[in-house]
Length: 140
Image 1 (cartoon, one colour):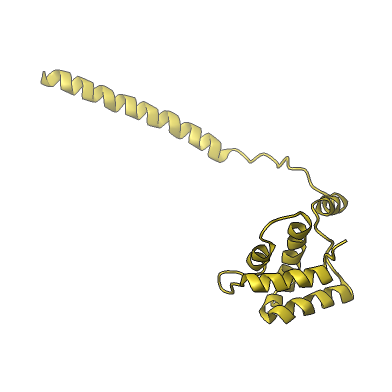
Image 2 (spheres, helix red, strand yellow):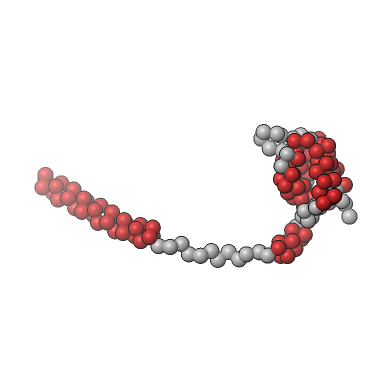
Protein backbone atom coordinates (compact mmCIF):
# COMPACT_ATOMS: atom_id res chain seq x y z
CA UNK A 1 0.00 0.00 0.00
CA UNK A 2 2.78 2.58 0.78
CA UNK A 3 4.26 2.04 -2.70
CA UNK A 4 0.88 2.80 -4.33
CA UNK A 5 0.57 6.04 -2.34
CA UNK A 6 4.09 7.01 -3.38
CA UNK A 7 3.33 6.32 -7.07
CA UNK A 8 0.02 8.23 -7.00
CA UNK A 9 1.65 11.12 -5.14
CA UNK A 10 4.56 11.19 -7.59
CA UNK A 11 2.17 11.17 -10.53
CA UNK A 12 0.30 14.14 -9.05
CA UNK A 13 3.57 16.07 -8.74
CA UNK A 14 4.41 15.37 -12.38
CA UNK A 15 0.94 16.50 -13.55
CA UNK A 16 1.17 19.72 -11.54
CA UNK A 17 4.67 20.43 -12.87
CA UNK A 18 3.58 19.92 -16.48
CA UNK A 19 0.54 22.14 -15.98
CA UNK A 20 2.67 24.91 -14.50
CA UNK A 21 5.22 24.71 -17.29
CA UNK A 22 2.51 24.86 -19.94
CA UNK A 23 0.65 27.79 -18.42
CA UNK A 24 3.78 29.84 -17.70
CA UNK A 25 4.80 29.57 -21.34
CA UNK A 26 1.51 31.01 -22.53
CA UNK A 27 1.68 33.77 -19.92
CA UNK A 28 5.09 34.86 -21.18
CA UNK A 29 3.85 34.85 -24.75
CA UNK A 30 0.89 37.03 -23.79
CA UNK A 31 3.06 39.35 -21.75
CA UNK A 32 5.57 39.77 -24.57
CA UNK A 33 3.03 40.44 -27.30
CA UNK A 34 2.23 44.01 -28.27
CA UNK A 35 -1.28 45.36 -27.69
CA UNK A 36 -3.42 45.68 -30.75
CA UNK A 37 -4.27 49.18 -31.90
CA UNK A 38 -7.63 50.56 -30.83
CA UNK A 39 -10.44 50.08 -33.28
CA UNK A 40 -12.74 52.57 -31.55
CA UNK A 41 -13.79 55.12 -34.14
CA UNK A 42 -13.00 58.75 -33.44
CA UNK A 43 -16.04 61.04 -33.29
CA UNK A 44 -15.58 64.40 -34.93
CA UNK A 45 -16.97 67.56 -33.35
CA UNK A 46 -19.89 67.91 -35.76
CA UNK A 47 -21.15 64.39 -35.04
CA UNK A 48 -20.75 64.97 -31.31
CA UNK A 49 -22.71 68.22 -31.53
CA UNK A 50 -25.47 66.47 -33.50
CA UNK A 51 -25.66 63.66 -30.92
CA UNK A 52 -25.79 66.14 -28.03
CA UNK A 53 -28.53 68.14 -29.74
CA UNK A 54 -30.55 64.96 -30.33
CA UNK A 55 -30.19 64.15 -26.61
CA UNK A 56 -31.45 67.60 -25.63
CA UNK A 57 -28.06 68.88 -24.50
CA UNK A 58 -27.55 72.52 -25.46
CA UNK A 59 -24.22 73.86 -26.72
CA UNK A 60 -21.71 75.22 -24.20
CA UNK A 61 -22.39 78.88 -23.52
CA UNK A 62 -19.68 81.36 -24.42
CA UNK A 63 -18.96 85.01 -23.75
CA UNK A 64 -21.78 86.96 -22.13
CA UNK A 65 -24.07 83.90 -22.07
CA UNK A 66 -21.47 81.94 -20.10
CA UNK A 67 -21.00 84.78 -17.62
CA UNK A 68 -24.77 85.21 -17.17
CA UNK A 69 -25.22 81.47 -16.59
CA UNK A 70 -22.40 81.25 -14.03
CA UNK A 71 -23.68 84.37 -12.24
CA UNK A 72 -27.17 82.87 -12.01
CA UNK A 73 -25.78 79.56 -10.67
CA UNK A 74 -23.67 81.47 -8.11
CA UNK A 75 -26.84 83.24 -6.92
CA UNK A 76 -28.19 79.82 -5.87
CA UNK A 77 -24.90 78.79 -4.22
CA UNK A 78 -21.56 80.51 -4.88
CA UNK A 79 -19.63 77.29 -4.28
CA UNK A 80 -21.18 75.77 -7.41
CA UNK A 81 -19.09 77.99 -9.66
CA UNK A 82 -15.74 77.11 -8.07
CA UNK A 83 -15.20 74.87 -11.10
CA UNK A 84 -17.00 76.65 -13.95
CA UNK A 85 -16.61 73.87 -16.52
CA UNK A 86 -18.20 71.34 -14.17
CA UNK A 87 -21.08 73.73 -13.49
CA UNK A 88 -21.61 74.15 -17.22
CA UNK A 89 -21.50 70.40 -17.88
CA UNK A 90 -23.94 69.75 -15.02
CA UNK A 91 -26.32 72.34 -16.42
CA UNK A 92 -26.14 71.03 -19.97
CA UNK A 93 -26.87 67.50 -18.75
CA UNK A 94 -29.72 68.73 -16.56
CA UNK A 95 -31.26 70.41 -19.60
CA UNK A 96 -31.49 66.97 -21.17
CA UNK A 97 -33.46 65.75 -18.15
CA UNK A 98 -35.74 68.80 -18.16
CA UNK A 99 -36.48 68.58 -21.87
CA UNK A 100 -36.61 64.78 -21.90
CA UNK A 101 -39.49 64.52 -19.44
CA UNK A 102 -37.51 63.03 -16.55
CA UNK A 103 -39.22 62.75 -13.21
CA UNK A 104 -37.87 64.16 -9.93
CA UNK A 105 -35.96 66.86 -11.81
CA UNK A 106 -35.32 68.93 -8.66
CA UNK A 107 -33.66 65.94 -7.03
CA UNK A 108 -31.67 65.26 -10.22
CA UNK A 109 -30.41 68.84 -10.32
CA UNK A 110 -29.34 68.62 -6.68
CA UNK A 111 -27.45 65.41 -7.47
CA UNK A 112 -25.82 66.77 -10.64
CA UNK A 113 -24.61 70.01 -9.10
CA UNK A 114 -23.88 68.78 -5.59
CA UNK A 115 -21.44 66.20 -4.28
CA UNK A 116 -20.60 64.38 -1.06
CA UNK A 117 -18.58 67.30 0.25
CA UNK A 118 -21.23 69.84 -0.74
CA UNK A 119 -24.68 68.20 -0.93
CA UNK A 120 -27.65 70.17 -2.20
CA UNK A 121 -31.32 69.99 -1.28
CA UNK A 122 -34.22 69.42 -3.64
CA UNK A 123 -35.21 73.06 -3.02
CA UNK A 124 -31.81 74.17 -4.30
CA UNK A 125 -32.32 71.79 -7.24
CA UNK A 126 -35.60 73.57 -8.00
CA UNK A 127 -33.80 76.93 -7.97
CA UNK A 128 -31.15 75.56 -10.31
CA UNK A 129 -33.86 74.33 -12.69
CA UNK A 130 -35.36 77.85 -12.74
CA UNK A 131 -31.91 79.24 -13.58
CA UNK A 132 -31.54 76.70 -16.38
CA UNK A 133 -34.91 77.64 -17.86
CA UNK A 134 -33.79 81.29 -17.93
CA UNK A 135 -30.34 80.61 -19.35
CA UNK A 136 -29.14 77.38 -20.95
CA UNK A 137 -32.41 75.70 -21.83
CA UNK A 138 -35.41 78.01 -21.96
CA UNK A 139 -38.63 76.14 -22.47
CA UNK A 140 -39.57 76.31 -26.14
